[in-house]
Length: 114
Image (cartoon, rainbow, N blue to C red; front, top):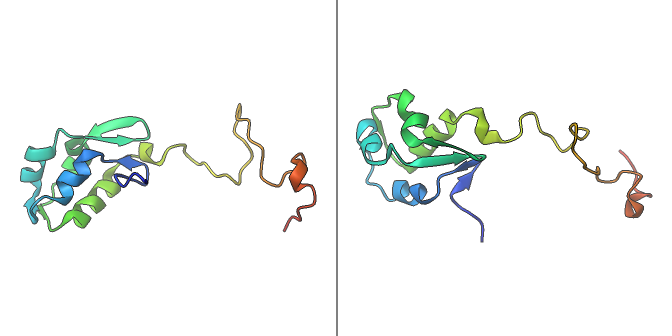
């Protein structure tokens, strides 16, 4: 079963259900008063909801989608995980990764490169 409370490196956990079930529209200050101390996880790091969206100073959020967009906009780059990562680049220093289709893979010797 997929974890629906994680999106783009941001884990809302139980807070997501609370925010989805909230009565909208809701004012920025009211939202932070109710949920500001709740933690959001981002690739092992945590921040409070107030720490993430507090600086926005919005008047209100019309629905959960608008609030979720604000959260995703305001999370720091810790949420993205490993910076500049691509599975198409050579392994990072100290990383033991066998590229798919590399000649050393027995079952991939005949694979054509495009």
